Image (cartoon, rainbow, N blue to C red):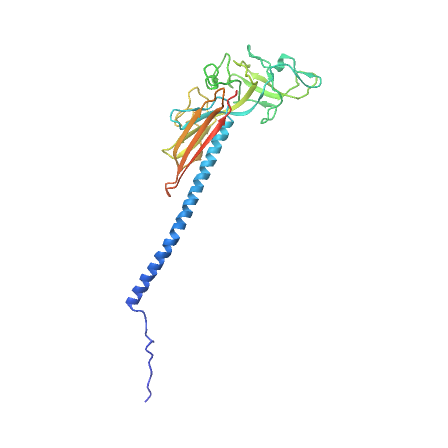
Length: 312
């Protein structure tokens, strides 16, 4: 008779108590590990969110500041809510010729056709001292305007003169006056092309004031930034009709038909202030922008002051 030996471990397994103990220990270990990992992960996510908000805020403020620096002197204006800013963008600028001179040998600029006249209509145009930098000649205006000595006050306000159809002005109306910028020398037997000349194509020039610094600007379009904390957006509007009254509602003319560009989102607070320049100092625009990510609760606030050179 043969005996069979059985192993007592052949049918061994985990008991329910052992499984509960293992699960409990694993839960404690997992909770301990998670406690050490959660804070670094949360910190990283917060850092990424803040970095994204800062990047959006910085790029937005830089864009607004760039437009302010290019604005026609004394054309920056802010509405009563301190959330809307408007300006007239300049395409280029130069110093106009007010008196005679000789730039190249044998080429005298003594003729009146080379100089700006403000005592009446200027039908033959005028030269600038040198050249415009941002245009290619010959340049024929369509919607562009010329501005001289805008001061932003009564009788010297580009916004008020934008629709003028006669009389002395500080900024031309393209519906009345268009112009051409060309190389100088077409009146002479010899063309030296040493300066740019501005001549009227339609209408004539009749500027109200002379600029103490002999500055003339080419204005191409108005620009408005609207900060809407209800939608959390900062938007840019451009190329609309210039109006004496500052536009503030994007749902009505002249902004209603304009395609706006989103500059920033997540905007929770926005304050725009402008201190106009005086004889002792230039103007300053202060941009105060707060962005908040509702998903993470992260918030950043950036403040930037932009120097405004208002010497017209």
